[in-house]
Length: 440
Image 1 (tube, rainbow, N blue to C red):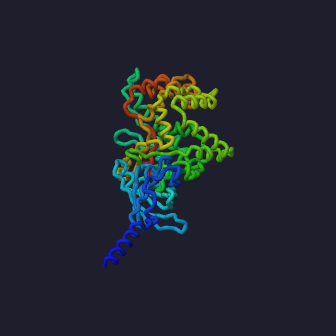
Image 2 (cartoon, rainbow, N blue to C red; image 1 turned 90 degrees about the vertical axis):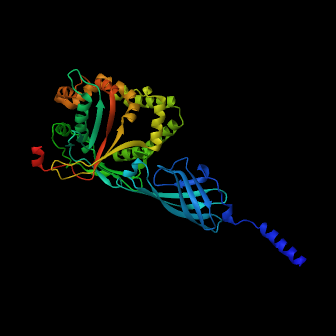
């Protein structure tokens, strides 16, 4: 009996010393940049990390931190299988409900992840996302101007401006600029852009004019109630890798792949796209590691070289505050925050409704740029350029706006309480039968 007890104790001791299974040796800490190869629908973020917490030999929980734009942290159950080389493959999926204010555009985001992880602590993770909701479709730019019951003008490009400034003749200049400016922007955008698609995978694809040839007659026609003829424009579709979108708090953030955009533009013009893209990337990398003061100096130098002898030389980037330079650099990396308003206008027939999303940059964003733009607005050269573009109508336009020159805009801005500039995107037509238009 004593011998039997000793044998059991011996075998128990041996069992306690057994080597743990390989899945139990997998790293439990977060795997970060130097050991993580991450691919996503859009540009990967440098501060992303992945953590795999094993539950048993076949299952675990994968947590992705800062890997998906707009979703700070996502966790999902994954199935895990050991491979012949000692690594482990995993795959899983989850759906993340949107609970913030942007939920009226996006209901949820489906996330799928797969990859491998090694005992040494390296991982490869492939992530795909698919957004579900109101925004995910192709939106057309407003095909005609429309004025609602509150005298708000809808157009392909739209301005909203509220300021306490009043001209010497009693004109509310901000209100008149928003009306006239919307008509001008509408005519311009009608000749430049046809539609914008927000794809489920986060890509933005647009149909734009193959040749930009703005017609003064179209612009003046739009101001005085005429339509814009786009029948002769050839529309082409942009590649899917130039811009991306993602929801964040109350914003639609738009991330621009600037080197790809420059390369595409040069390719359209037959230029050296590869060489210029490399140059732009080098400049961007230099800016990302520079201080705000250094950034302003670099950009000011570039602007002087590019804008020498032109009106652009009047821009003064040194007037932008250092903290605002930091914001702009963050926008270049993490996306420009677009606000949005959703409306459902009823057209003049009293029956037809159009779903409309107005995406825009607001006063907070423009306040960053205005110190640099103010010297440009104050320059007599700008008045000369605009007067030549508008021609004989320029004196009348100044009377309508209640300004003596474009320099007055600086005074108007000083009393501005609300400002929005952006695009009106719709899923229908703002055009009504000719007879009803005439009656209105």
